[in-house]
Image 1: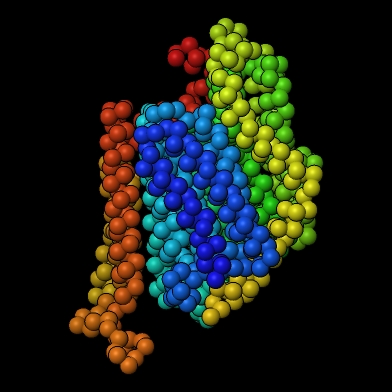
Image 2: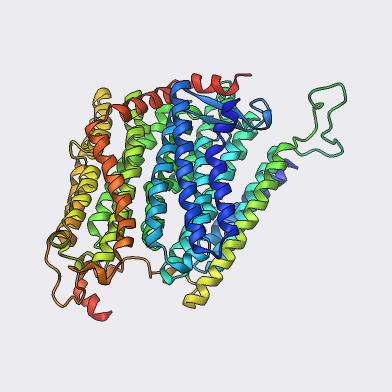
Length: 504
Length: 130
């Protein structure tokens, strides 16, 4: 019975705090206090949920006490548990960062409630065990994301939002069509029940067709090759706090959903679907990293790098062994922290150096060596240097590839790793290492003209927190490794999930 | 009846894709609207189309008799219509705002947030032009 309260808690808390925040929309201080309190409570709830999942393996709540498959099930297994925990942790970091990064006007137009609602929708997608319910959570995620992207109405933001909106509405329609067709052939919407009923369905071609519809939809949301073009043209437009949250979490949620569908439901024709996934993964890695090599804007480099990293996660799903899925889970969690942190650092570099353009930046390391260290930790983790967390993420994936002799994809992954390092070194050399360009009027050595010390603390504290996590995961990877191992085993041994959900 | 509706769904899909490939943003948004209607119609067809057989379950039975339409897909599209309507309203307001800001409704001229091709080749010239 306790699960019936605990599982919806990560959905209810953000909703409640968004509602309270909207009531006090005129009062800036009240909104900030409510938002921070909410995210601390959310962190507590997520931690509690995760510890419960850790001791119980898979926990299920049937909403309204309608037995599965008739009602909506909320399911927490290790993968969704660690994702909810990471979202709560990074959400806390983003809320603190927002205190200094989001201007008064945006706060008055409901920035904090919108971010809370986005958190709710993300948690809903992670925890739901019902396909149509997942569609509704996706739509909620979209509408809050639309609002956050367009908040402020600048030219660039509106343009980025138009592209984001059109492509995402298309992707939702495709998803809905897939849901409808799946319901048409199985007569069920509960994911566990659909998985069971598809086993008895004797037309694998039809299932593969439907799985491709879902692949296009999730691919658009996760920004895989060749469906990623909306991402580099929208993610760099909003304020840093918003793009950091998007970059860290939204695409990874799509990867989570993809991992769930392609281990639980669509495993009839693994040879066909997962080979397509493998091609997509490899091409996504290469195209993303090459795109980043051509860019000279801090946030654009990072945005298009998201695409490249998504490729690694898809590769783990495509290899479809316990070790590979372990790598994917590890990689997703690691990426949430690292990618978000790099975006946050780009915001601080902009505040201190006065630009996002690498050519106009310079001398940050000379004036602020601590920022250089924080950047290096995240950048090297992204590229996969030991002993940082990214090393273990890539190591497990490559090891999984070695186990089954997938030489080509390993070669691609390792080559892309080196190119990733090239992009990171480019940022380092341009923004941190080189001298300030001549004729640059900004006096970067004295930050007090640009930003108050209190704001700087708000900006830097979350970065230190996330960088610390990267180092801790890197030096003591056993814990996250164990979590990922258990998550991967639950994904592969899908009968546990099905039995837990359908247990009367 | 199913065949007729299937053909209509196909035509609607084709029309929406055609509209979404247009350069005018208004047509693109209308294409999205038609697409969501096409999807709704296909789900509606999935729940069987029957006449004169209300989906009622007898007092002493647990399942409906054979030959009645499934009511659940209709509940699903009701939800989907409401969500689609809300998102469509947002999209309309968004392109209106975008038009007010830029006086532009052509998708091939939306290049503010993109990296200009020239800047990758010759950044200095570009800077002077700015």
